[in-house]
Image (cartoon, rainbow, N blue to C red):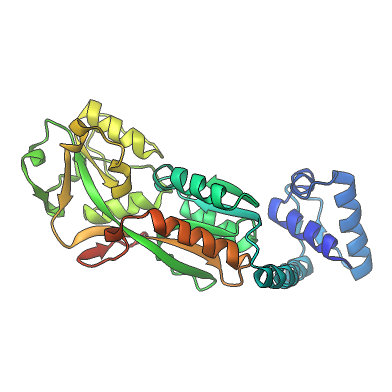
Length: 312
């Protein structure tokens, strides 16, 4: 039994497809298949049921795969110990980030980070909260940037900043006459929302005290883009609720249609999230520092703010 075989085993469990697992391991499909079969012969058990598509682990295979993940994590700590002793900031860092943060946070972070640490390869995916949690647990991601708390004992959450929600209001809406907005003053039927699967949708529904999105509009538009929400307000009236960073690129005319909430302001907590037994601590800690450096100081505290849960 070798670590390489265990890597192939975990990859096949993750992707449930021999071709995809082989591509992720940078080997041919016959090579991966042969090594999995060799491992099964060594252990004397079948690890996968190949009669099903996608392939699924057998009962004993599930237990062995779980232990294989532990072994691979522990073996990875050897390289991490050496790297920390040397003070190296290098290697590959796989990051997942929710789409409502990515375009407003990452561009500057990436430029600063890559200029300072050219030996690091950042691999970034935009995923929903549920996907990031799943991929952290399966080892496909090293860390995630998302709204918290997620209330999962297998994950560590380190808050980075606290981002207020604001309203972005069409020029024809009566709320535009107010300087500050109370959540109770918002007509829920006027609100443009992200589609299902985005944690910010749940947070906005909480702010508006709506448990589900019954729409009184003539049509319902499903989008995963904050930028599209702005455009829908511009062209179709109503209003939307945006995270604070999303108004940084508004024009002067658009900023006149932004209204803040009365205190305590609804806020989301943004954290860097890792698996409980995570590796690459130096890299993740360095990324965390780079993010905090570009965040305005007033966003680093949650004073006079009400953190909105992503699930309730």
